[in-house]
Image (cartoon, rainbow, N blue to C red; front, top):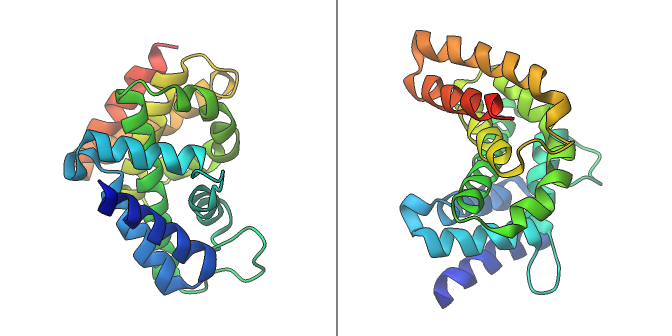
Length: 204
């Protein structure tokens, strides 16, 4: 347990001190694993996911800020002026960011953590527009769309008819329907995730 805790601290410190592509990529890959309950177990994934969403003992939310910055601005930090120029690099970093976000939402929802209900609305306000864009863009990037559907599904089931989600229900349903059609043609995992996401949207 202590070793796993130190792995989170190492990943966080790398993001804080070294805003480079290489250090960010290493950190993100580690966090993908640590938030995956199937790989690390429920207790570890829950603890790491809680820390990402709520911050560490000192209240630092460096990891979440990096994830959001990658998804929204394609850069490593909100105050950076330069975007990551290489298209493959930014695509891989953004996929890692979306995967971590989806893992966090899934494990917090499944374990009925109050943190997702408390902090989910503000996160939804910030990232839902880009999440829906990635779902709708399934034709261009099926893997990204799979993770975006996972995130939206877990968030919708956790927050229900929250004011941050309810007004976007029709837009979300349309985007997920499009992703499902793409999945049915060429990507079974996407079709499955989209179908489950549609079921969640239908309940609100």
